[in-house]
Length: 356
Image 1 (spheres, rainbow, N blue to C red):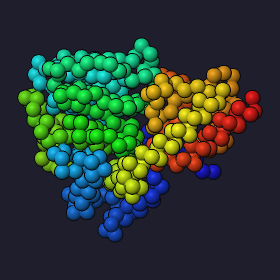
Image 2: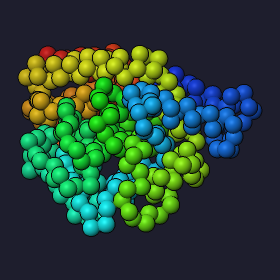
Image 3: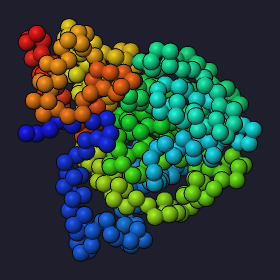
Image 4: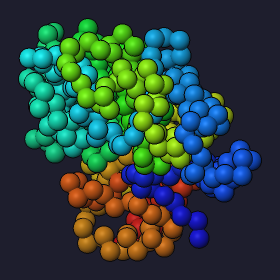
């Protein structure tokens, strides 16, 4: 039976990425070697890294605009540390928007480096909305926000206008929608939400912001050193970078981010339309802040849980239970999720309505 993978991450990827990645594990570029065993300094892999970095900038509309793209080891959580190390000056200040679990984690790390101001928080509402109407201190070294909150199913639909350098964690909606990415000084995203397997993190950084903190930074945490080494300062995560490149190629083949956004909007409209129409369900996030990537919803009557769970499992749906912080259900509809799979979930929701 076909599985409909709604996992929040590691998540669904395009089938052709699996196929080409599998072939590369057996024989990469007809070299007689696996992608898992080639040297990261080999001509073949240097070409992979160069293309991946260039294609990331191209898809974001940042090519030739003074940005560098890096594929670093570890997950986005390391950027919670690297961002303040590289941007917060000694005795400086950083401003953070607290919109969910991962934003909270980033704030915790920043507090090790200096004055960390929370400009707004939706914690009291269990993060079911994105805070609005806040002011960013003009003397902050940078402002940090999280564009999409995977756990709670909220998404920033717009970003503040500020002269303060802006940093954004886009781990769960990178390459999913068209944004003016030039408004950001740093964008970072763990691969495993919408780009590739776990193990690498994309960091896009404006060249002019590098080396401005005045701090002595350990080499492995210094963006300047990674940029100078063209993302090869230490042995990179070869396979995750290659799989991410395949996904970036796939996005370009679909027509780029604009084409992918159109499909994502259609998927979200289909599912949210059913959540709002069906009297057995209700959305967990504020309507105006609903994420196109992660739809969170609840049953109005918990007595229907056993029946609904049995039905969606029988339909081949996987990875839909909600995070314990919210409960209910979470349907993660990343770029590679076909709308046909969303229709399967909608059909099950409608079948439940008829059967109870």
